[in-house]
Length: 638
Image 1 (cartoon, rainbow, N blue to C red):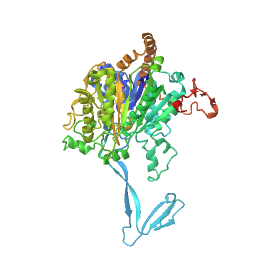
Image 2 (image 1 turned 180 degrees about the horizontal axis):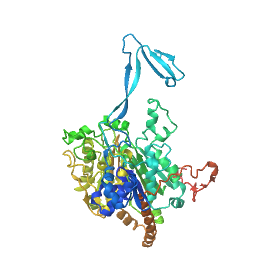
Image 3 (image 1 turned 135 degrees about the vertical axis):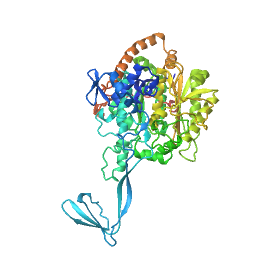
Image 4 (image 1 turned 120 degrees about the horizontal axis):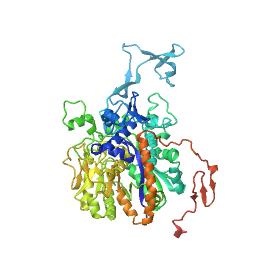
């Protein structure tokens, strides 16, 4: 009997705001929400963006003015909303109009026959003096250089980027200020915030929960797809020598793509359990989710944290994607909208999945999902937000171009549909399922992905499976994009609205639509309409994945067949207190009263502190031991 992996907590941060309690999802469908929930969204974003701080029952602005909630929203509401979703890159990251570059030059003397001469600080002289240099000491601090011939030099310059839009985290949000960040790269700062949000959003006391399972039955599977490429990670390591700076001891280790998992283990959960990093371009989140799901289903793991944290909005990464022709440049967006007398396009509409488009929009995000097996979830009274019964991932086979689309995604989507049909029936697949598409907004992807979805849908007799794509609002957060898709899909069962691709005015003529309903506007279906969602990723290099997400109602209905009425009554009684604790956390986050979990140097263990026998290992601080009575899976061979 397989255990059902259920979602008991989720959280993080992306360009729409905080993910937990559906806050980011609510930002996307903001105009359809009742005023009371709109106020909650705006107050949460006011705290995140540092527009106001809650003190003594009032909201204090930077000018020192104390406002009530209504006045704050009336005064700053539009500004708060403008600081979210896809927009022009804010200078808090870097100045897109003045990106530093260096030009290679050869300098010679102006006067013919004369040698080039200049002075320089002696400490700035190269260790290896070029053969055509003559060095003369001018003072204790400066030297004169005379060059016989040509001086090769790099001259500092700046240039504007042709790509100026991104799904940047809400302007004003600075995760480094929320804990002792110690020069951590941005992606790891986001990890601390996002993983803490997921744990605390559950309403569970982590220290109590982890004592209910053996230490090796907890797992963390997380990664990003590129690594930490900003100046505090790999980026600084690669650039420092060329910029006359020093490589630090943190550049290399903190740049690794597995660091999000390492940070969660070392500073948030204190886990000694199973750990793994799977990387597969855009499908990275789902690759890690697949591992968690399979481990929980088999019983090897009882709790798993799945996550990712990507911060790829840097000039270098943007330029790399741009030269591939992958990103939406301003000039192409202007041409797309036939705007000849306008300097810049509407950056908020730069990502247009399944419409006439010209490239994807890069984004940043940190997303974390807390999973448990169904038995443990009921035992602790955890809120069940949904379930992940299966994830499928397949490669493309032989390819000509490594970046070209292939056949792997036909397998992932068709296998997922076949599996889902066995759970909710053919009518459930056809009529009560929606697709969260990869939806990158590139001309090639709109054709190839729509063909995958259409072929799979029509093969199972579907005529109008709703299709949406969250990248239209958030941008493409690379390896973490699957987490964005997963967590924003959960909001559909909270508010009953399936967000439409409102940045796209019409479906492009070359998009395949048979069996599909590509949704270009928000639509009210009702919270109980959908039984499931199919989350698709179609990654660079042939990394494809489709995850099956079951609604909370369907998940509970399935569990009622496994557990008695008495067990469910006991579960619901425990869950009432868990929900109350979770909502208390949510309100405290809105007021800015909660700091991320960051346990640096907390309960550090050494090998000499372990109690080891031939049957178990006892770890100080962990209630249950690690069991060494390991089953031999090959006992028929010995």
